[in-house]
Image 1 (tube, rainbow over the protein chains, first blue to last red):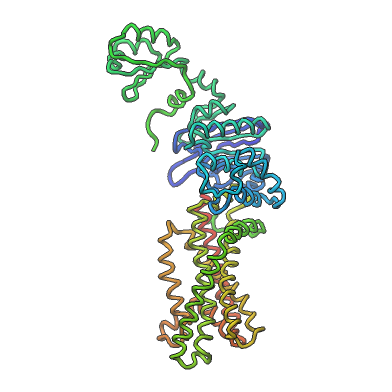
Image 2 (tube, rainbow over the protein chains, first blue to last red):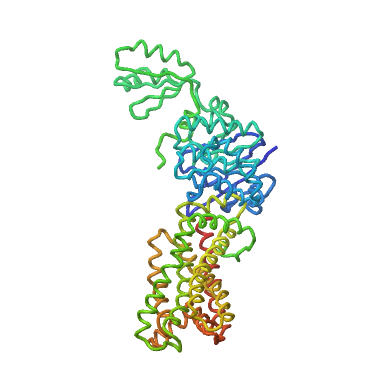
Length: 305
Length: 261
């Protein structure tokens, strides 16, 4: 069953089409990842799906409600973790949850009854009465996640949930998201951490210049778009090696600065050849292809800022 | 562009927004009340006694009593303007509080209505604080008549909040508000009869004054404090309502354009 569908979605700002006709379907209980470089249109897509901006074209249905016409009704069962924390700095942790619960029409007793569980989930029980300014970045993110759960949502949107967090904090958020998936919640997240997408998402869509350019499971995308092995070659002799051997040995050869990326179905053949060239000032790293390779392959190596 | 300027949708969903602001205010209530009360009260008493001693009756009353009516209005205007501009802008732009609220099942119309209701409440408190001093010092003629000042304070709160929210909607930063304070609020304080009767002004300033909303607030409050029925009540009420509602309508359209694009 699809909890969310979008067809032919378009949004233009000034002369630029930021969302240029995308189709999406998110199934109940899955984690759906929207990947893309900065400025690809991910956040705008989320705003359209939440009914916070009016699309220039296309149809959206979220939790059975047409959006934006009945976005308000849809949002009653949606939780949102925005890209930048917008917790209330004047409030304690507990008051943040209380004030946010009221926006959903919950009465104070209901919210108060939910707060201990939410704090437990976010591992913030010891901080219940702490001021927001005293929290670390990871704690603020956890509180933002807890706040998004105050209405017990069926569908949770997360916009780059772990950007700027240290590895410990990031792993903790991932763990919590997995718990939520285990409870049957549906998650839609945007990210440009391929590792995050690979670990959490059942299905992914890669977005660039306002369009979806690939869609599928993480493994599927890797199999479909890239050779299974990558040998990264660097060092003084890399350029000579590329001309002498690389071009014949690799299925595809890319240069990024001083590093060669050799994509191949036969990693060992390449590494053996490199071994034979020992002393030519070559260093290399052989690894299986991952989602980041797919991402770079599809969206290019150019900077986007 | 036009779609942003559809009529406001009014709903009781604004209440949690009001309560959010109230909860913040409660935490900082003592300095807030002091600011609302002490500052205008010191001006009123200092000028009222200091200048009042040099002056005979002004407008048929003691200078202190004259100034007290002006201060009720001026304090209400200031409080509404500061709250809608500096505090409102913090919530909208700096803290992104409105953005957080919009992810819940509230619309921008609900948020802005909540801000309007809150700002009117806060300016009511400021106006009331001065009114209480007026009562305590016996600067009124009939207590029953002076109670009518309360709805006028609410009306002025609405008027100046609606106007200020327009500035809020188009402001890039806090500094921008200086234009409004310098070009709108300060001239009103000086032209609308807070410190001296408007008819002391040269004719052209007198004419400008007649178009400014603060004048109409003062022309309602001052007679009520003196136990008299104001002249031209309907006209004054309509002017205040017009500034407030046209302001609020424009502010809502501009804020929608700013945040919902």
